[in-house]
Image 1 (tube, rainbow, N blue to C red):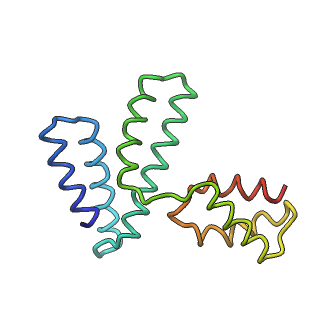
Image 2 (cartoon, rainbow, N blue to C red):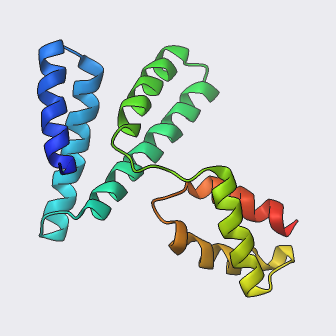
Image 3 (tube, rainbow, N blue to C red):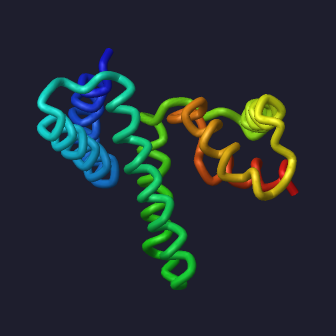
Length: 147
């Protein structure tokens, strides 16, 4: 089942259940996917659709951090619920241990050991982990590895 089909099915379920939060999230995702489809001029592949969902998830997490920083617990709770719904459509992410193994192997292949090699390692690791790991986790792992 494609992501679009899954969203349509879940949209119907959310409408029947009168689940406003799910409706908002699903409609938002459908809108983002449609915009990307129009932008590219063709039906989205699973990879392209996953990138759209991951971008939306990242924006939601940034909003959550801002709400928490601003002391807006009411908005933060709502945002947490939206994140939980969006995560159902996001591709499975690698664990911190799996990311660490890839980073270590890449650093070894590049003979990188100093903090000045950070950009070189990140440039090599990110294409390998695109869509599979959070960029902030990768960044932190590379920083720890290179000192």
